[in-house]
Length: 530
Image 1: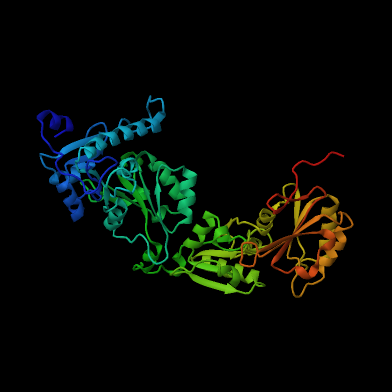
Image 2 (image 1 turned 90 degrees about the vertical axis):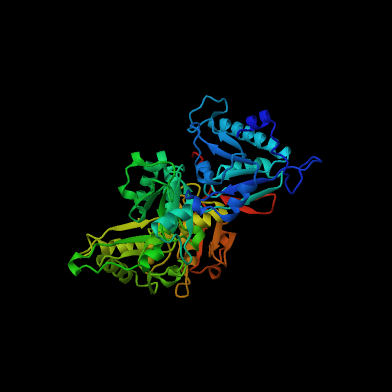
């Protein structure tokens, strides 16, 4: 019965009142947001059935064709004397002539729908807004909740989500142990989807339909397509499940999801017999930069590569930054055996393993990428795929903490003479200083190298003013982080160790104390003409 029919016949359906009161003096009705589950009426909760039975008004959203999935799920519990409020969307795509555009049309519709329900509540009627899945999980009900819950007594009845239903239909765990489950709308831009799919452990992408081609490309770019599954109309008539890669995009409805299930569960599942040695699939090596410290500095791509790896190879300190994952093998070693680490990683990949070589900072800057590529260029490793993933390098991390001292041309030089003679280092320092480049100096000193910083200071003072700003950035991103700025003439070698990076300003670099007491260092992008 529609509300207009109820008024015309004089039926009083508003005799039942809610348990709370509104802003006026008369008792008001109670608002319910009722989750109906993913589609199968037998998956409705007992509480959902109870609330529908108690309600005077049953409201549901539908498209302009008038059919409502929510109503079809609850149909067996609707009575002839229920007042039905069909909240019909004015648009189902973003094409509209509304002056406020698509969003304006929807906002106007939600306001009108909320006003219709408020009229029932003000009359003392109990209103149940039914919603497939869970009312507050991408549910249409939440738009009514935001507009009415602060005005009327309200209760939300949770429902089984399509996410849970899809996992159950696939028979695959969504997340185990410390895995992170990410739920994404397929309406996100492809780049954003790719980044998030790359960085998470497990994922569900909702709202497919016309977004399916974008979602599939993002899955492929993120390297997750082989793991991905497709579930359509879970628990409903016409249900379909398949590997995502096999789905024709022209056949995908809105009520479908893409699922990347638990990797841990997949690893613990029975595996097919191992192939003969000559038939082993080739693995790959990915050299991953972890940034200067912990997880906050990891890129999404690096995070995904570390999660997907079967073997992790690296210096113990850097491996300790990577969370432990069941099924992964760790191969830790000392910091001075780079070639041996590279060869180990490539040997593992040759046996079909997915290997991540873990490097601090950016792997291509004084780090592991060079060692891996050098060995990979030799027989018998030339055919093994090798990828290098960038990371936040120490120079950029230190510069950001100080301000923008590398805002103009700069040079990056390692002061370590373990792999090149000091004469080469000194020549390069002279050349960079004569060119008035700002300098980022890696590996400035250690317990066995104590004199290089003092020599560097003397050399640079031949080209730079004594008050040139020098940034001492130690343990950036770590628990002992410190950033200090001193004049070049006052640079004390005893304050520098292997965990310190030095940034030497150019002749144009400025040090400024701001009103809040903080000190910033920056190098202007404009250079004066001679």
